[in-house]
Amino acid sequence: MATNITFHPGSVAASERAQLLSQKGITIWFTGLSASGKSTVACALEQHLLHLHKFSYRLDGDNIRFGLNKDLGFDEASRNENIRRIGEVSKLFADSCCIVLTAFISPYRADRAVARQLHEQAGLAFIEVFVDAPLSVVEQRDPKGLYKKARAGEIKDFTGISAPYEAPETPEIHIKTDQSDVTESVRLITEYLTTHSFI
Image 1 (spheres, rainbow, N blue to C red):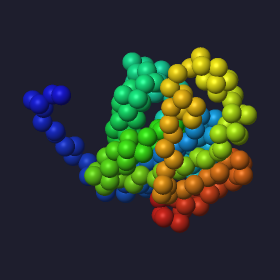
Image 2: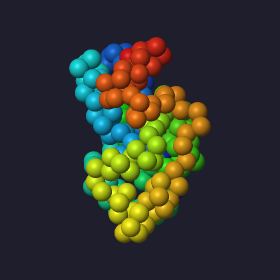
Image 3: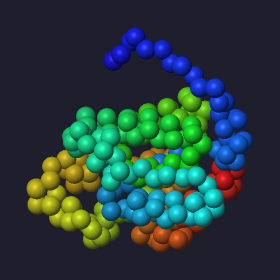
Image 4: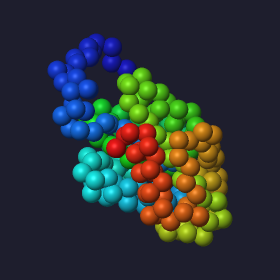
């Protein structure tokens, strides 16, 4: 860890940025098993927010694992570092007044707690969305055939099969995607954001 660095604050205050951009920065952190619907709901919410003229951006495995985190594997230490980096990046996006949507399995409560703490220490909102679907349902969906491979022993450390998933205990929003479709899920999140004056 570098010790010979000094933080140089910018000249734009957070309140000034928020006032000029007419929105607050927040992180909406989607967590859930693979194939639970995290990215699907996040994509639809991003589109909805943009149509409301809200600056928003989605971070997920496709734009993080192929770039910033392409050096990481899927063992526990790599998963921890993956989520730590995403927490730091989402904090920067939120600090810019972006509504950032992160869609990652993020299986460990401790790692999600670190991401939340990063935001809270910076005075930024962090909204955890538990995208919940039973294992039987996500295995049936299995769009990439990953559960089948995990069951066959072809993929090790696969969340929900050979690696743990620690469900959130008190998420701000809990969506059951075996009961709510994408439109309803977006409506529920938007309602929460409106009620709490985030949009």
